[in-house]
Length: 462
Ligand code: KET
Image 1 (cartoon, rainbow, N blue to C red):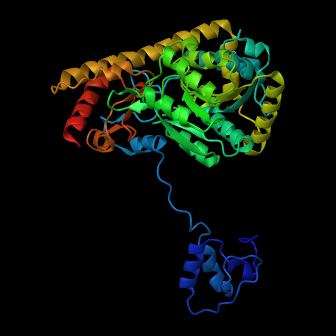
Image 2: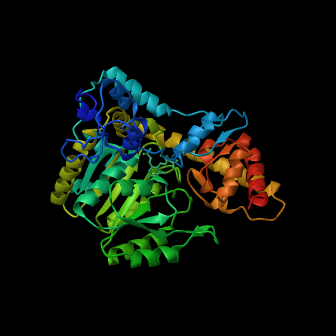
Image 3: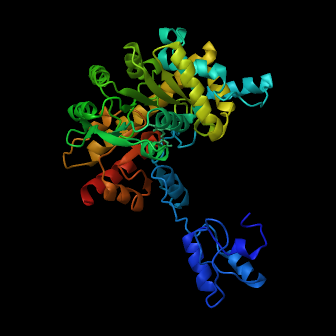
């Protein structure tokens, strides 16, 4: 209405303060009148003739929108693409590359896609909750197909827009049904967690997790902070391969964490983005979630197939809510659907069919496990080579063995912001400013170069 109307009045009241300032400056000396529109925030807007109106249209209504900072993780890939240096290395985003540093599409994914083409599947809308075969496959994979919770229909599963979208949907449910409840997030955590809860208007605070002195888990700090949180808080936990630290609790520590969460009536909220990628085993990597579920606890679990099936761009994942009864699960699912409908209506089908085909076919499923072991194995090899090169190149006697103890896609190097910037500015090694490097983007051949860069940045930059 504002842009289309030809009346003088509508052009005379831009909605943004800075736009109105530039209009005034451009047209100094012209007649000013009070705006006649109801509730207009610019009662001192001007009235002017057709010629002036053209100029007024050129003043953007978006003047007040400031430049957003680059994303701390995905922005690194943008900077990498702009660098013309041949030695450049992108260790920012957690995306698996081959030894030749090329993106990798899993063989099982290609086979599943061929199957889909042969079947000539249609492109009709999915139901709001997603593809039924996917939802079954994803809950089975998470909890184990023979888990009684599944048979008792106590799990509400809704297909989400990958891990991020699934977390966001759960955050919307928390905001709607647990107003004021706090989410506790590990310090540090994946950079997007805080954005997700901020945008969903869910308050959060941090619990201690990483101890720089031991380069390990601050278990006592974590337990104390979880204990101190108001009863009924949500405790966000990384199911495996904690991002960015690569440090997971031991099975005994998981038990103690579960004890405290139960004592305080908190609700565990797992983010499972790396199932199969930490150990190479899908079951072993789900053991934390299964341990909590076996205690009869109600919990949230967000899942992602970006990494373990390499389906980054397909945006396929799920939110599971394990409930104490099947009746509750039906109601929770109905509300998740109600939240999803106005946000994105229903999820995309392609990635869901790939997952359903791979998990649902015993031959493809076992091929997937072998390919995953291969990917996890390549990362472990690179980790070992990097450690060898660091220990060999660094004559200071610094102990780099923490790199071997970390698991998953990443290594948390301990480099600070200035040192990380030196890695990029001097060595063309792109990484996040918290000192995290993605080993999935590293080749054996580049380990020595990387070790040189790390040793230089660590010792020569404060
Ligand atoms: N949880 C964690 C812990 C995580 O590391 C990621 C992605 C996600 C969820 C979401 O992934 P999705 O593709 O929405 O299913 N992490 C990598 C990519 C990113 O930042 O988006 C990363 O840390 O590099």
